[in-house]
Length: 121
Image (cartoon, rainbow, N blue to C red; front, top):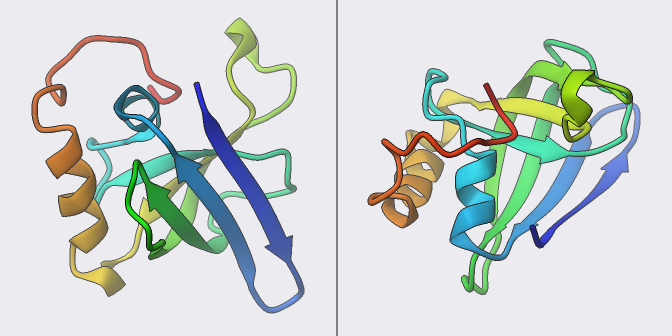
């Protein structure tokens, strides 16, 4: 998978930058089963459930980044069972009024009902 995530953290705000370059990587990261939708973001940062984050998401070949406010809803730590990818699951907030979810589901329209494995549940 060709994902890139970087982080910039300080006491007031936590910002993650995520680049998803292909549809398979987007499918593996997207969480349609969470209210408002969500994404798995690979990171080794120290995050806890309930942490508020801001994600700058670049999807596939789109030139601009999509700003997404969200909350950490799960953490996959180092050494997780089954060699799971280390990172956090982020639930999208109501702030973008579903824009992030719509854009992601547009790209995944033909694969949302697939049973292929993902980084999520």
